[in-house]
Length: 209
Image (cartoon, rainbow, N blue to C red; front, side, top):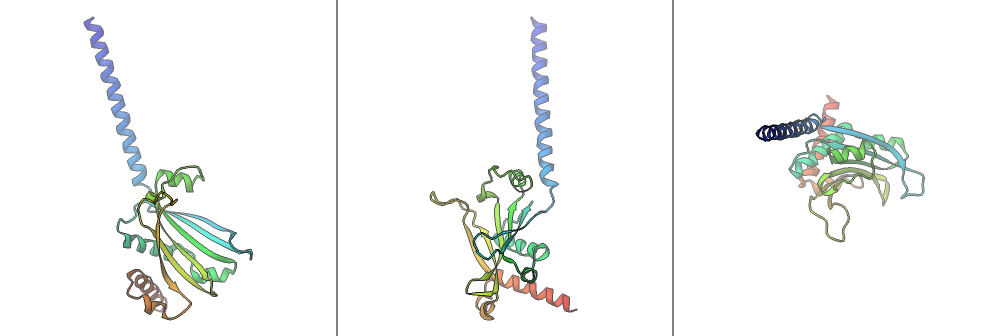
């Protein structure tokens, strides 16, 4: 009886050690799978028909998965602006193409769920947008003046939606508006508008050197 008890005790200890080992290895693997992700994953969906218009024009969509987004709201907005400015389709290029009437660059946190949704096209994967959605850069003609365009930015407020509201709540800013030269003068006290303006001025200065 004593021998059987000893064997049973050793067996339980062995099983426990194996389980602990599996948990530790799994945790390390999960940790490194997230740590080793690139800062940005760029998914270019390209053109799709703009069903909100009757003139056979297109929407151009890009989705960006961000591995370590800044926690501060202003820094997140600057991150989106900088990434768009570096890797997005410029307003000049959109105008040159002639058949695009809406441009969208959306930013989401890089998680297992968002990777499955965006990279593997598993459309039924549940992503809590209140937790994963960061914001977006959008560009479109101004309705009142179709030859003039505006660039906007939106960001997730990070609050739970009301019971009658589906999805996350966002706040929107206009970064640039071609409809009048007064736009910047009117909004220059807004830090994010000023940041975008100064970024464009630095680019022009570098090109002029």
